[in-house]
Length: 349
Image (cartoon, rainbow, N blue to C red; front, side, top):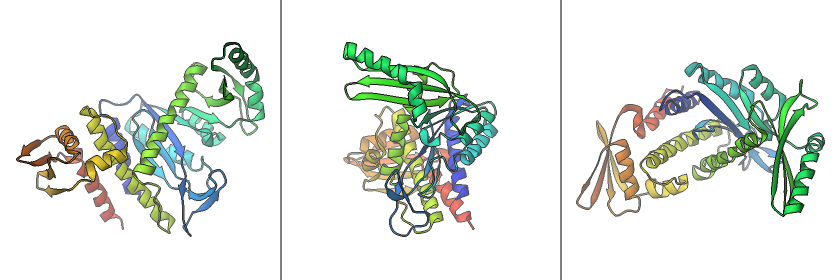
């Protein structure tokens, strides 16, 4: 399993470096729920989700959208559990590859714990992390919220105001910069708080934090469209293996989607891509120097395969039968990941 995770991380480094060494890497950490059934190892009831579950930890590149890694955890695990250990490993590999890269972490309030702050500050990692609202934070934002309500009552237009201040929770060793948003609208009022080491203005910082919502679409693709929540083995270690296999499948499908986007095809969810591109009848022949696909010329995904084969190189038509050739160029061909993973699996003792 370790070797499979290593292969996926190497793929990430290779893809991320296309176009030049990145100056910054934004790590989006997120925890998600994975319902369990029966007597599965590591299955526990989670009070927030109100179900028996696993609690996987996912890390995406917040700029490129690549899945970096996926770690399975027991259902009663706190959202931040193992995050520092995983962050330490990822940061070490990133700096080994790109010594001068700036690293940044972004996460929701589940990761708002001192151990995360302290590690990031020690390693010069910029962070932006949501905070759970409490009475002291509400008191800090009270004046701003009153102003937002006053403006809304005067204009009838939704008001969003931003400000910042220093805040120190009881478990923190020192105060930290906290920005906050106060909203007044027809539906009522709303306050949000974020702790950060960035130096942007409060409004820009909050918009940056809110943009992590795109990560929800990546998780949706991974869980629902790649079926990553189908971890049905009884043993916990077997389900971690299955999670990595789903991660490999995500990489394959996402690689195809990116190639299609480069060819001018609109972006699709992975379930749509799977239905139109993969779930089709045809014949595949793997030759010494090429992969040849025989597809019916009238099937609905023909145009996608045509665009994809051009992106990878090599396509021609024959009397009612579409023959799509993709020549092998090492890791550039789609089958390379499958071959590498199969090799790793054979080598596992």
